[in-house]
Amino acid sequence: MFIFALIFTASIYTSIYDDVLSAYELTNEAHNDEYWVEGSPSDVIVPEVFIDDDEPFLARLCLNRIRSGDELKAMIVSVAGTIRFNCFANGESKLELYGLNSVTKSVTSLLVGIAIDKGFIHSVHDPIAMYLPDHTHLLGEYGKTVTIEDLLLMKSPIGNMPLFAVNDGQSAFSPQLEAYFAAPDPVEFILGFGAAESGIEGFNYGEGPATLVGRIIANATGVSVVEFAKQNLFLPMGIKYFEWHLLADGSANTAGGLVLTSWDMLKIGELVQNNGAWSGDQLVNAHWIKSSIAPHISTRSTWSQYGYYWWSNVFKLKGKDITVMAARGFKGQFILVIPELKATIAINGDHEGFNDLGGVSLAEYIIKRYVPRLLD
Image 1 (tube, one colour):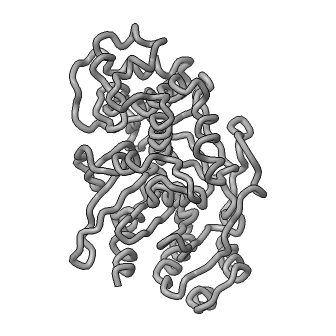
Image 2 (tube, rainbow, N blue to C red):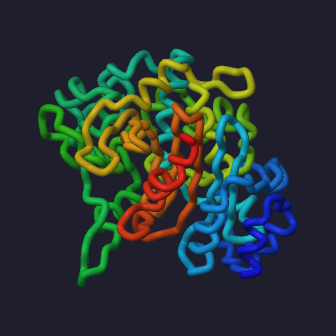
Image 3 (spheres, rainbow, N blue to C red):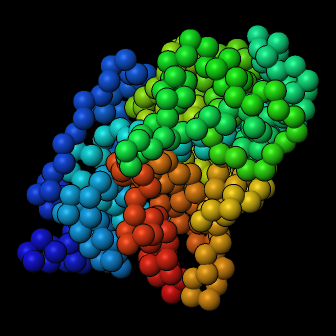
C-alpha cells in the first residue's frame, strides 16, 4: 500500500518514482553488436519523469501490470506536446532500446514520403518494376500492374507467405518466415509468393510488401534504408541511438527490424501528430502524412481501416466519435495518435502476441478507459 500511496501523491519526483519501479525490476537484455548502428545511451535526452495529478488511473494500471509480472515495458502519454505520464518497468528502461516489430512498417512509410518529396520516387502510383531493375524477370506483366501504393496498402498478393504456424497447439513463426530471414536474396524469395497471380486483391497483411518497399527506397535513393533514415529522419529529430536489424543480404528489415527507445517512439508519433513538422522543419510532407493515416482500405479487423502502413479506427467515447491512428507491433508495441485531442501514446510490451487485458488489447483498454478523461 505504501507504494501505491507514493504513486498517487500529487507531486512525485524522478528519484521516488524510479525507486518505486525498481522494486519490480525486470532484466535488461544485452544489445546485439551485430545490429549496432549508431550512438550511445548518453546521446539520448530524457525528459524529467513526471506524473500528472490527473493520472492515477494510468499509474495504477502500469504498476499492476509490472507487479503481476506482465510484459509491459514502458508507456508514455503526451497531450498537446506536454508529457502527462510515463512509466517504465525498471530504472534503466528510459534509455533501453525495444524491438518495434511491425511499427517498423509505419516508419518505412514515412521514408517513402520523404523519398517522394525529394524526387527520388515519382509517385506511389508508379509500377514497382520501375524500381526493381534486378528483379524484373521475376515480375513479368505483373510488375506493370502492381504499384507502390498497392504494397503500402497490403493490396498485392505478392509476398503473402504465412507468418505463423501451429504445431501441437503452440503458435510459432512459420517455416516460410524463418526461410525469408535467411534468404540470400529476400526480394527474390518474396516474389516467389504470388508473383504469377494477376489482379489486385483486397487487404492481405504480410511481411513481403514492406520488404519490397524497402528495396524500392534503397534503389531509388542510391543509399541504404538505414543511411537514408538516419540522415533524413532520425538525426533531424535527435534520434541518435537506434538499431536496425538486417536481412541476410545486408539490407534493412523494413517489415519489422527497427529498434528505438520509447521516447523516440513517442517522437515518431508527435511527428505524425504535427503533420510531418519537427522543431520548425517540415521533415515529411504534410500531404503525405494525411494520405498515410487516411483510411484507404477495410481490414475486417478491430482496427478497421488501413492507410500507408498506418492503422485507424473510430471509437465511440462519451457519445463522440474519436478517430485513433496506430502503428502496431505484434509483441505489444503501439504508437497511438489522436489528432482531435492532440494526444500521442507510446507503449512497449514484450508479448508473444498482442497484449490482452480481459480479452481486449492494452491499447484499446487505454483508449476506452483513459482517453475519455481527456474529453472532460
